[in-house]
Image: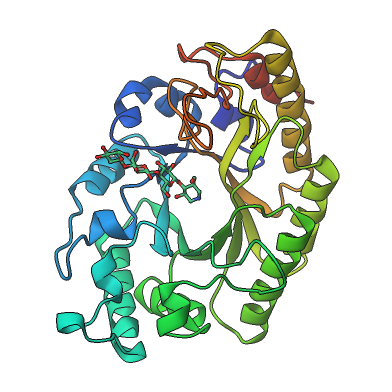
Length: 331
Ligand code: G3I
């Protein structure tokens, strides 16, 4: 049997292995990135507020550095993200001198942002999150209200995909969301994307963010989500995976390291999840972790202040955890 040393090589016949990076982790995690990953996502550096903080002023330097690193190391990239209610500067939704912005003006700003950004970054980008988190979590309302939907209307999503397709017909265009495996939200995401597909809006795939915990969501809910989305005939990507050692509402802040029980449970959970991903590998193009090692995660202090987290397969020293060993071991 081949003795695999690298996660991306172990999964070469299944899907790409990705990581989200930021200005710090691209340096601190350099060796792990080169050895184990063949896809990168900018954690924040390609969001609207970073790329176009003021109208017409584009700041590409940080993201360009990431793209250069990726290219030098034969790593591909996902673009994240073009149209989102979050991390978008206020000017985007404001008219001149306090006047209300019209639908057409906001569409123009959307078009200009999407086209400038997508044509600036050439290779190594193979996919883009065009619209992020547009579905409402609660109640029966399908779409969340946001300045995009209020000023343009619900068809802001269609327009974003059309602009993206015009800019880059060569990359895959994704809708990306969280709570993707919860039955209620899953159905809403499914309905939204189904309606895009039926109206021939140019969408290629659905991004399942997969911010999960040791016990939730249930593996059956994950399986049903994958099957439901795949039934639309689109590609899927796991875009932001982490396995928190705490359930969301757990307010425990006393731990300075994960307990053995947590790490054992996490390894079993990663094992089960990756075995499911392998089962559906014909539908899944990439599995991206929302970070690299437990040295840094956005989950530190979120949603509970002073609560450290250990959600990845590499520990705080960059060493392989039991979770890594489990997902590397299969026939
Ligand atoms: O850069 C500033 C710094 O100058 C300032 O001193 C500091 C004080 O709070 O904030 C820093 O900005 C923070 C930024 O991350 C960089 O660390 C923001 O406050 C913080 O809100 C921001 O959080 C990011 C979050 O998106 C914002 O929505 C996380 O890093 C990032 O991991 C997270 O990523 C999202 C995906 O894009 C979409 N899906 C969910 C996922 C997790 O929330």
